[in-house]
Image (cartoon, rainbow, N blue to C red; front, side):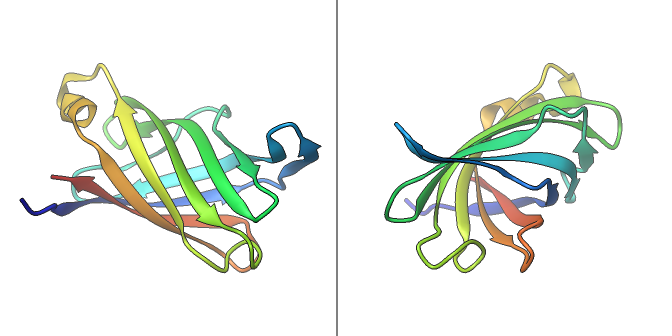
Length: 142
């Protein structure tokens, strides 16, 4: 059995200045609110909806970042889609040096996009030099 990766979209996410809580019981907490976000793909296009999107990342003493992201976006044709994902990144050499790897899931009640409710996606992300723009290449796993 071979795993296939079917392109879903490219996401470009602009982040606000993060809030950093060092030395919590879970490690360092880095909370990065999302200012804007755009999805561009043949099967999925849209933009961030509202202001509730953020990443509640924990960072271990060794520099392993565990991502916890939730967001709402609206497709180009008006469907609302809830997205959430977890993932990992290696910040041991600083942010933006190594990629981020995540596993998004989607939820919607809009009949045009219920196929999103059935898929598992994976994505590889890169952080811009100034740590303000995150770009993900998102694929459906088959």
